[in-house]
Length: 264
Length: 264
DNA sequence: CACAGCTGGATTGTATGACAATCCGGAGGC
DNA sequence: GCCTCCGGATTGTCATACAATCCAGCTGTG
Image (cartoon, rainbow over all chains, first blue to last red; front, side):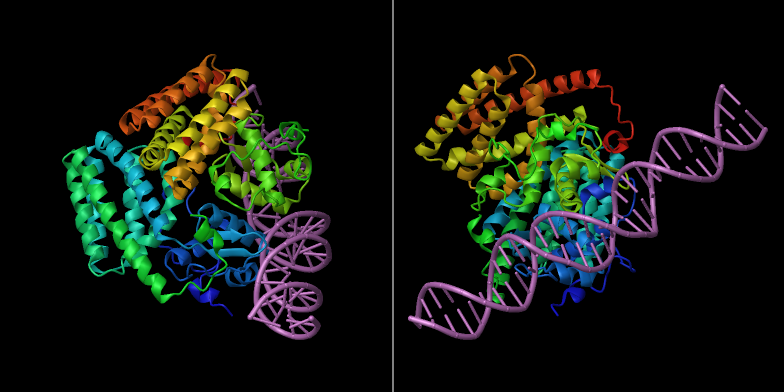
């Protein structure tokens, strides 16, 4: 009816579910392994679909359709919606239901600004406390990143960069930072997917990240911070450009999404 | 049975409910007024009880008891729990149920560190863009703060300081920042209540905030930032001291809260 | 007495069906 | 063309049911 099942790539809570790996920092901190609860699996599935853009911003998510597509009860669906709402991946209009969140250029700028400050916190802590082994791990992840970049495997890139950040947060020993970062992470990843549409963006990003790692390895906090700020500034601009392109092709059919236009 | 009703101060979702005002930044941004949904009211009630310390950290929250105390169905209670979980006010142990989140000194330090960075973002934007009228508003709120401080009215202080921050965020025109800050705000407010137990802390805080406002009024961003950092550093230390005192009087009877000890 | 294993009660996780409240698109009237 | 009203669609809430899981305490054994 509305293509939800396809958006979820055939995944339902109790089926194969080829997971690439968590795309949330805090999940790496949890010892208790994979999500067993149907609710958690359902959240993952919907989150992935939104981040990957298979559910377009502004699209309505009707509870009954979600139940059918995910093959879970309304009880679960409604709890899932609360989770996604907290992550700001959906906007819930009272008595109207949820729509996939829409990002304005202004919001994107704000997200990148905050993201930058938190990453700077991680980075400076990391440089201060990382052992040589920690830095080697970072180099290893960077190598994976390059490999995935060469294949232009966007999904893998998102997963690896999440691991990269988790490693920084873990060494920086900043759990609350990771929690807060996660709140932004879903939306950051949406934008990452988007900005990867720009030709050359993937290569640029990897070059920038390589530069950051080099400065970190040299224990040069100030230079690393500067490299990071250059990177996120550039990435942010690129994301906004792509967002505007998107906006042109998709002429905002959901006019009822007032919260996204006035609220900002 | 377990004193939940008293912890909620007799409030249920459909009764008097003397609200002091939102204790969340984003609620001020929303035009659509007060929470009408039972779910939202219920979240407010439980959140307030946790922040005010009427529900002690480590205390179990049993769904059935919450249903009775709040006079709502389990559907609503479970959605409320998802909200509070996202706010990190409760820790949910799978198949065990939620407990009121416990803060370790390390978490407190992390919270204050992040809080500081976000407030600095607000502050610098504010100084850059605020009109004279905006600054007058800030002075007005400061006056209210002093008045409430003189009365040692903790609840009012929390409400006013939330307005203070919202005003900064609004003028700084940073909605995403406000959203993220809110994720920390509940826990910050817990700590505020706690640190207000220290004699003289309220007066110190107001002195510090006055100083910040003065620097802002002088359009001196660097000095304002320094004043802010001094303030939050001091407040953080004070909160940790009070937290340790609390820990001594209340000998952690909830030994099952493993996530709070290992997870950090 | 210490301790491993078992059991039953308590609690969560999920499903189902029901119904009032609310919203919206469109029919009909002016 | 615009306003009003209606009915269908959807959300918000409730009540109930039951399987899965966990844990405290009992039991039996050495």
